[in-house]
Image 1 (spheres, rainbow, N blue to C red):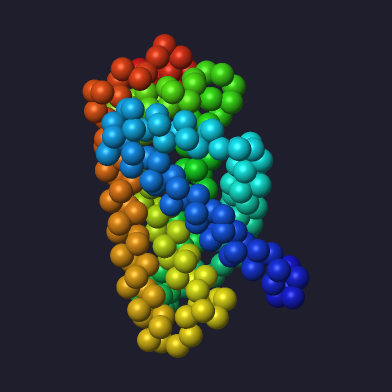
Image 2 (cartoon, rainbow, N blue to C red; image 1 turned 90 degrees about the horizontal axis):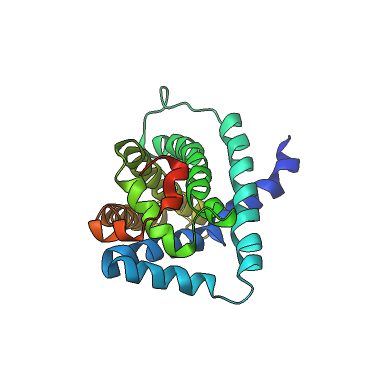
Length: 224
């Protein structure tokens, strides 16, 4: 694919990483953080609110699943085509470029697996929306899955934050070294805040109060 033919897909890939997927990450962070702030009831209320939105199926299809599919699959292609030259140019932005590609692959795999453990199980009837807190309780109390989720969460938040920095540059919003330097500080702060909030949520799911939300239906994952 030459530069002319790849211009539109790359721009679309970049735009979808911000709208709507960037908004989805923020929403997902806040929904999960309700488990830390409000316990099982707070998390149930957040999930119920989202699933009670009008035309929620179409909102998710066109606002999450299709953009995620394109952004993830095309992102894998971009990562495959990239020249990772950190061994030759070891400076900050080049390392960030390399990590953006690596975390993109890790994030895509993590998101697909997370959706399989949660939304897909709801879709096929193995669990209900009310039992998702129990699902996450068992995930968070499995040492294997806990480590994978920590890696996945950190990769996803870095990919989002550094991607926002790159988006502002590539779309001509932050022009010049000073603006880009300030932007890097801001998005580094966003990375830290989002990572902490996601990890606080993940460890909140380990609490015994979420165990009561689990059911026999969770045996599908062999985590109980």
